[in-house]
Length: 130
Length: 130
DNA sequence: ATAAAATAATACCTACAAGTATTAATTTAT
DNA sequence: ATAAATTAATACTTGTAGGTATTATTTTAT
Image (tube, rainbow over all chains, first blue to last red; front, side):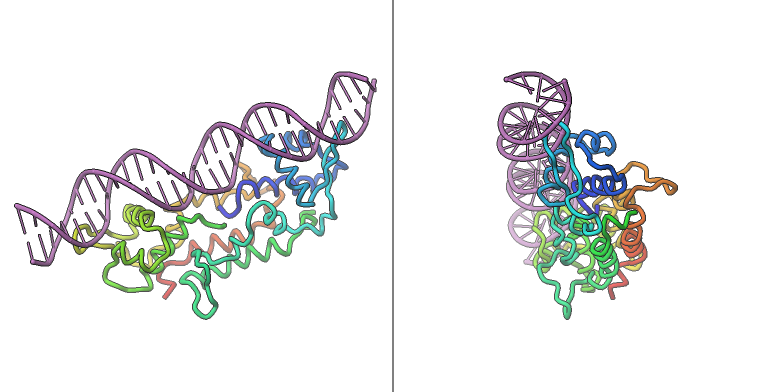
């Protein structure tokens, strides 16, 4: 499945915000646009705030805006904030160690897709969507 | 996380068998070599039998052997037998439809790693390990 | 024949990701 | 002041992948 449902949601929220270019986004407006369970979305937004991607304003005319320039937010960082990116970096057969000189059976075959994935998420930012 | 734990186990078993070149493998011997919970492994072996990758012989001197030539067993087929490969093919943001003319925000960025992954597993067989 | 050694079937348990519910805190329009 | 509209915190529920336990079946060495 590649990435978790929660990663999926996080990407959905932040890519939407990056492309929309509004001054502020309420949880309600994001709920209407994106197809994410409301209460789960609200908790996720709080998490994304704590992770420093977005900044919350409470109260009557509150909402969320980006806390940092979007060209500093890498996809790897987003995914890593909601699940463990290490699990992608490790051995595909789950071996604790998979040494270069004596790698697992799948090692060579897996190298290309693994690098394609890691390179993409580590070198691309939200700004690259524009 | 890429693939499920069960896919990991299935690959571990079959790649081990492909490389080892023994005439037969008992569940016990596989358990000793591979780091997979014993009872879970035994159930998985039965599943892999039903899926037609391996063939079981019951009874005192029983065990498992490949049911087909290993150059006909693609990694995609193995993964697909224990989890839903469709979930890898679909939209990364989980949209039910992600049309070419109006794709999701991540579509372009995701294309390369996704294809690298799918191409690798769809064009590589167990025989390619040798 | 019978016991041992193997796989098969089935049911159950557990941990955790995903989802829901409730209440608290904060801000602002009136 | 107060009510409305927002986010925050916390606890609970659910679904399912992963793991365990028990019993049945099959085969063969003795």
